Length: 398
Picture 1 (cartoon, one colour):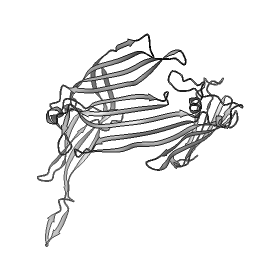
Picture 2 (picture 1 turned 90 degrees about the vertical axis):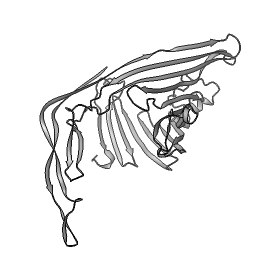
Picture 3 (picture 1 turned 30 degrees about the vertical axis):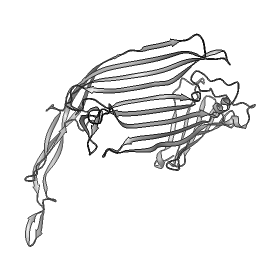
């Protein structure tokens, strides 16, 4: 259950002042009223000082569990498989505060004959931290199902049994409304994650399905796709993305015969020493690449489109010049679709034993900043004294 109570020093009241300011025009030597320029009254807002509260709440309950299905084998390279299912169901209730005559009122905004206009407003419309909800009463049942599939296989080369996840967190989720008159079933969302190349790359996908059809204008109508089109669900949007994230050290260890990944499939970066070669200076540099493909419906029609969502590569890391000095590359990114560099971030860091000084520069944005803070793990680590000065978007003064 969530309960919220807010107090404000004043509320507002809007009043209509029926003072018409006519504007005249001459048409064929006849003086007429120009209705488009005439002011048909004035809507004025007043502050009613005095502390006033508003309170609202919503309640819900959630049930979830985990089911494990395991099959193991003693012989052969295939030693076992386990499927983990995590179903969850929840329900919630939120009252309708929009019918409250105390919170919400109506004011006239125009007295033009035959075209009188009115507008709804709330007495806490000037509120900064929160205001009464205008959402209608809602009670729904939410459901979700998470899946994890793992398998074990025997490696004769290392004489060990390894565990590999086939897919990680394959989910299905949706809801059913108990208070709506139509379109009670929500769209169904699903997605999953596949780890590739010892965890260096992740293949993710997300899809949205709709049990209802759309009319010629592209609006959802209360007709099931199964009855109208013979399909259980209608595909609304599908996106697949390949994310690759690695360090220079990961690349080197990937081709080393004695390399062994950790539990997550990533490598711990090596510390640079005098014995390292020139490439070792860049060992902690991280390379990120993301490319995604999207297929989705066009909102105002029943057609769909396919396009490349994102395609960019970025580089970040640190180059140790000396034990005290280092060059920081916060981000150098290139967008292949826009064909341009995106917000490079460069910096210089000096280790002052118990203190640390950093200077950063973003050339395309025209910004720069510097930091002075306590070095983590030093004798002054108990102090929280960061000092920061910057020139935000070229508008401030260094």
